[in-house]
Length: 178
Image (tube, rainbow, N blue to C red; front, top):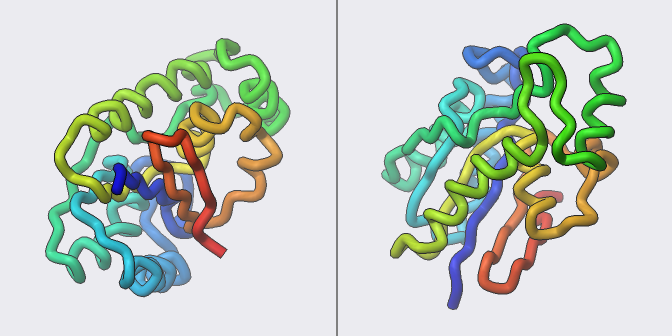
């Protein structure tokens, strides 16, 4: 067969801080993810260390008896440490210019590269079916690596949660969540 990497965007959360928990709706969505993956083999689960990513994956981890591994490289990208009133315009520019970097933040390319370090390592691991739970911006950048046309408007269409299947051997990316 081939390596299958399931990119999961976390469920609805109370905010953007590292410690933000899932909302009640988000907790229900995390249970829906258990059903969503019921017919899909998962060998390994790796998540961002942010609370909302871990909480999104916890019910599936418990249902499958698969431990959650955290990896800081899956943390959300910081666009800027300043409060940007026009943050969406700046984010859109960062999809077009991967090297643009705002005060205290990281460029799209830097974030993409750290996320791809994880994917590249997983490609060489023995497990075939791996679930990664991360955040919308980083997930979009990982998809963009394999599907360069993926951009700001695609990011805007992401839902919480969302699921994409990445098949690295064929560079195939497909949205599974409906």
